[in-house]
Length: 130
Ligand SMILES: O=C(O)C(=O)C[C@]1(C(=O)O)C=C[C@@H](O)C=C1
Image (tube, rainbow, N blue to C red; front, top):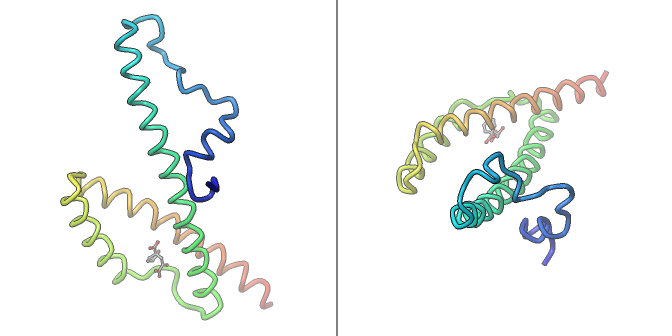
């Protein structure tokens, strides 16, 4: 399976220097405890890889929006859309037993980065027009 689709494949394809066993706890906890910790951390590593790949795909989509907005001279931000997104995500977070406050903060963090990208795209588009 392609590593573009399956981040776990990417994980095994190119581990690089990453050692999933690296821990400041090494030698300070019983072997069984360390084994269980490492097993859970294996899942965490897979989730983290998926998060990175998902975010990369989201940013590819928002880059397309950024170009569309620059070409048509539309504002970088759309507060009405953001309000609807945040309300939806808070609802989804509640259903998923994720703290809605955290979901909102996380979304706002991503959106502010997207707006920064839009502004950069718009500025370079305007420069190319001149
Ligand atoms: O949908 C848009 O218009 C976008 O620019 C994307 C996006 C987002 O990241 O979801 C970012 C900025 C806008 O304020 C609203 C949404």
